[in-house]
Image (cartoon, rainbow over all chains, first blue to last red; front, side, top):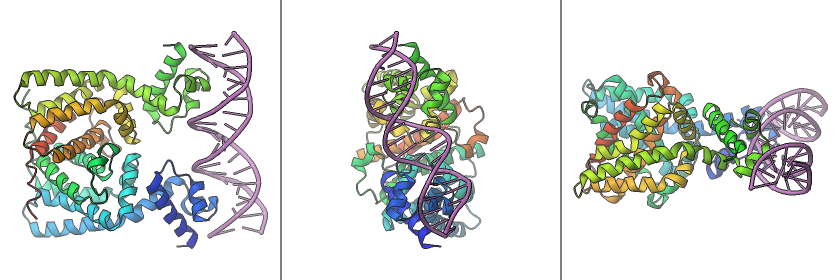
Length: 206
Length: 206
DNA sequence: GTCTATACTGAGATAGAC
DNA sequence: GTCTATCTCAGTATAGAC
């Protein structure tokens, strides 16, 4: 990778983490990086593709950790059912670990979520990993209808991305914003109970 | 309200619902509405304030329905504990009802969420209503520590806003995208179990 | 009070010279 | 690979007509 490309990535990561994607202009980035405006389009094609490169560089290690944990849990379960909470932990805890090692990661992910850019990025790069987790949850909850499972995964994704960003309204109780582990553990408890709920509990009342 | 102001609101609502906020320029809106560019800034001040006016016009009836349901539930409960699921329903079902009567509402709210604009709007106009729901949940779950309750409300908000927009990845299972009632009922079941979960279940394992 | 015409600043993107 | 110059389009601000 050329020096110019590296400088653009590093500067973009820092500025987007600090100010957000929409509020960070390419001109601001290139001024701080000391490179030319056209170099961004030469190396990345567009502002959106630059963001993509920045996010992938941060998120790839997290996804690797997630899959490693999931591999271990599935090996332990053998042909039996994996534990729902353990599967959820393998998905959520690596985020917290990455956040503790690399606080900018949280800021960047929080920004992406706050600006509604996560679905775009997730769809491009994380879909395969998510499908593996859905399969693990399916084995953990064999009685749950497939459609119900998919909706609950949907709910989980919403709660998770909300939790990864410290929305201003909740900032006062966030404690150390970079220490995501406690809140991720709360989330595992919450989601675990939701996933275990009987699918028909709310529908038989009619 | 003047005719010009009305036309701007109607056109902005339609175009933003179709294309999103960022992708809809003021020039596009005023061209379709047949009004002058400066009229937008005269009546609304800025593009963001225009969005605000559009959203409030749609969301005010939903909030009124939510509070009416909550009033009824709290009256029924008297001095006892309200039912968690009923409180959640009073928050979630009016959204589905509005969606069935007025499909553009869902599209607009989905766009707002997808572009990360909900926290901004919620903070401005819905905060008081949310606080009433938090109070109702607190009475419904007297054993739950306050901090845990606040995090679970946080999780709920994430799952709900995710559910209100049909993310492309889930579009295939959305059925009629405007019929949100089934998915909101699934969400009530899921969240109800999460809220009822023991707060210490996930923390004693250490 | 309402609205129009017009100009200003800054954004992302691109063509072509080097 | 890199840079200069330029393009189009965005949101915003203001002066003044009705």
